[in-house]
Image 1 (cartoon, rainbow, N blue to C red):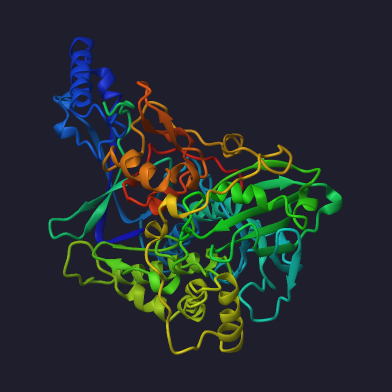
Image 2: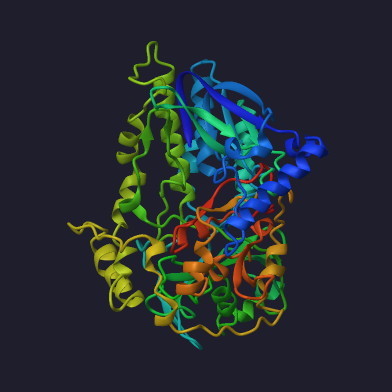
Length: 575
């Protein structure tokens, strides 16, 4: 998000100093017992799971009667939500323009991670076009782009063999001129450049609420409340140096997925002074079999005869997971509204066949900054609303190389929705992209939301996954431990349910509880009721790596991911 205003923007910091625990015992304990006891009696069959204030408003909770929340407000010219490549590029470009024209401009950026880059995860092969526009002297500035691509390998995997695919010039997976990077390190470097230019960075602040003017335009953002009690009151590996090929980029499609499940792998050899590789497995969330586990497909893939030799004798040192916005041009929403703009990965600027979105995200932030700067520094910025509306950003984006790039590949991802699946999509790509460069006079459509694609469990075959061997493949919880994930334990779970009865009544009954498989962090599990006569959903919110897959794939659309207290979540070290 980027939020401009003609005058100032309000940032509201909300804080409660352990309000519930601060109430005297003779008031707090009886109220807590009465409230929970009444809920339990009124819905004995469905234990209460969700306690978050977005579902159970505090004004309706008698425990909050008489409790005052401290509120702190601040004002800025532009507030940017999210310290990723797009947000930081927007902030940098704004300050570059302000400094060039000697204008006073206060730019603030809030980021929910405890440090800039700590929630950034990508096995990134970076196309440096946007970076070169932002900082033509990025090499002299010490940007951590240490590994130019020297070798491109693309494969179709069968269960036991590999079919090599020639990497022809012009194909979207061609990486000549790109760099293999640890994106977290790159984002941290961008943060340093932003601070040097005068951007105010606020890591550890999770934006949880949009503030509005009376006319409905955006006024600013509020960070989330803290001090509320729990009850509501790609892996990176080090490998054998003999197997290390710095600059090598490897991609594959096929096994272990069937032809109708979109996905593939990457394995990048980094040049960071030690034999490091970044590897990962991507599964399209429009898969139909509720028994599929993306995490366990990843573990199976590492045992393929073409992959395993690289990893044997090595050791895993980090783990993470995230969701990618892969809808492409057809799924981009309206990008501007009174008081704000959408930039970066959120609106979906990723080039799906390239598996690259950092360069397009950065460029969107730069274009937004230029459009906003022109409006807020005008002598008399015109706007029908109190929150400045900047449609010029959308126009600039559609005239940029970002739009041309996304338009050329718009049909590649939806072309996989055919009887032949993966193989039909590859044939389509070869004919209409490599030969015609995406100039076909039609635009294919997607098949609907990812959540609507799951079939009932009775119509699908359970998948038997092999047990992890502890050398190449691993269990889920030991992997999550390597993500550095940590949350304040005594806060309402940020994974909220609109209806606590739906998980058992529908998801478990119809789809055999797919959330316990699609979550890459072991957050959701079905456990027996204490009475022994049924099951309940248990949410281990402290494990959450903030990938938001649950919010996307839940077939009932009952899960609503909201931000936890700022600073919580994974602590990726240069992932």
